Image (cartoon, rainbow, N blue to C red; front, side, top):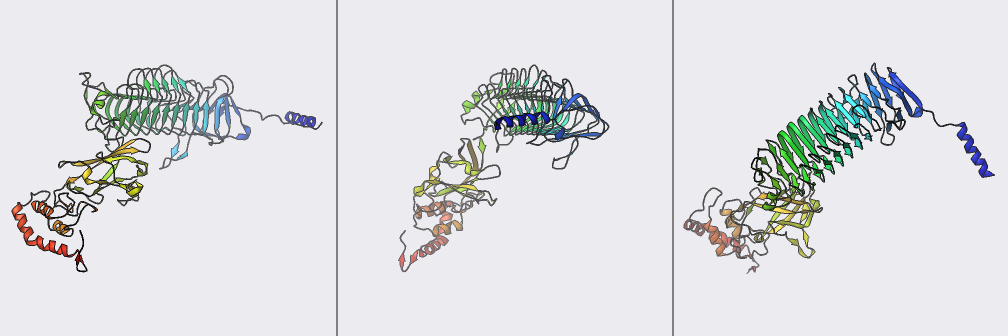
Amino acid sequence: MCTKRKFLLVALLMFVLPASADTNVGGTISTNTHWVLADSPYVVTSNIDITSGAELLIDPGVEVRFNSGRGLDVLAGQLVARGTAVDPILFTSNSTSNWHSIDFMDGTVDATFDALGNYVSGSIIEHAIVERATGRDAAIEITRSSPYITNSLIRDNGNRGLDVERSSGVRLVGNTFMGNTSEWGGAGTRFIDSGDIFISGNTYINNESSYAGAGGLQVQYSHNITISENLFDGNIARRHGGGLNMGVNDNVVLSGNTFTGNTARGLGGGAVIGDADSVMLSGNIFTGNWALRTGSGIIFVTIDVLRLSGDRIFDNIGDGVALGSPDAILSMDPSKPTWIYGNTGYDVVNYNPADVNAMNVWWGTLDEAAIQATIFDHYDNSSVGIVFYDPWSIAAVIVDVDIRPGTDTNPVNLKAKGVLPVAVLGSDDFDVSLIDLQNLTLEGVDPNAKGQSGKVGSFEDVNGDSILDLILHFDIQDRGIGATTEQLILSGLLLDGTTFGGTDAIRIVPPGDLNGDLVVDIIDLTAMAGNWSALSGGAKNWAEGDCNGDSVVDILDLTALAANWAFTDSAPPIPEPTALALLALGGIALLTRGSSRNIRGGKRKSA
């Protein structure tokens, strides 16, 4: 009986309190209008035109449902649709048929920003979902205007997600373009004849162009274009540019983008960039992309000036990068080398008559023959230019190395028996704690370990920048370097398996230059006197006076010092007879003085 009463009560409440009714809207909005959550959903039964400088303000969580073929046009006013991450605004179809689009026209009140780039006022779509539209050009169409589109999901639209034409200053930030399709390219987004474009932090995923142009993003006939920190994943182009297709543009900058899993049945699986005066890339990743023809990672076509710095083009299915530029440099900054390796075709294909500067690239190997085998250039086809790859980077990550921290000339005495301190310097861009201490060498020699613990190195700030550095020590005699060696290479692995390396210059100094100041003089003789007859095997460094490396400071070391007396960086030593005469006058007294310092309590200390 109790259960029946509960059932009847629920049924009665459902009958007495019907579901919230739809709010039908349409026609012209010529005064400020506010759509609130309590009246949602709003059903657009006829086209909406915002005119006369009016504002349409839409609250978070509101649903706007368009009947078939209906849309919203901002003709002379502004649309302010600001949802939240928790309560986004929804623009969708009210039936199984698709609606038209949201159009921002010439009379739109454009978005404005402060000096830090923060939104201040004007037309905006933020934290919204825009889906299931089939507008003439896109679900969101922008013409001669610049609304701000940010943090929104634009998905499953039948004729492109967003289209921008003849506009300046449009910013797309933090959006996701997913599952959109288009016949004529730019299924996610297309820009045509526009300028001062800023596209940052967006995700383009699984968009598809069924005939021409990019699956993800397409930019044509535009200028001053910044594309940064975007993800292009799984986009498809039936012809060229799976993730990105750019043509006939000026001043293009791509930085920090990732292109992965994109495909093209023509050129440029990850991206194709053509017909531009200047293209600058830095810190982009192209991996796992595929193209039927060439440039599975990326292809450049007729680029006047092309520069890459710190980009990573690896493990693409086919050729890594294809080049058609008369002025191309593939790795501008030796400290941040571009990676090009592991692609299943050639790593680099040059199809232009001009030579290519591919120096300082990390090829995934130090084997020159292996590097040569991954390059297609003049030696494969005499009609194209040479790809110059030497010198190549010694590692994927280049670090700052400081031999003998605190000294500028880094003197090394080949006869010394001590240890050589080497610092790997940390920075804002490199954390030395990421180094695998079990996998690093200096010229192939392992660093010294500490006692029974076997601990390698120590962490301290050696250059006063408040950032930890790694300090290592290596036995001088183990390195096998020669008298003409001018630099040493430290190399190893990071904890994630990435190779790293760095170099620092050294100066081989003659026996007798005990303090490494590149001068053999009275200071060195005094240092020798202080250690006369001392064993140097336990010495802390090479400057204890053992010039010939026989583990004792004696007459043989004095003779070596005499042979190089008055040596300087720019002058030869004084002839030996003169040196010996000088030592005879002043050296004996110093040596006697040095010996007397070892007498304690009437007994000479044992050496």
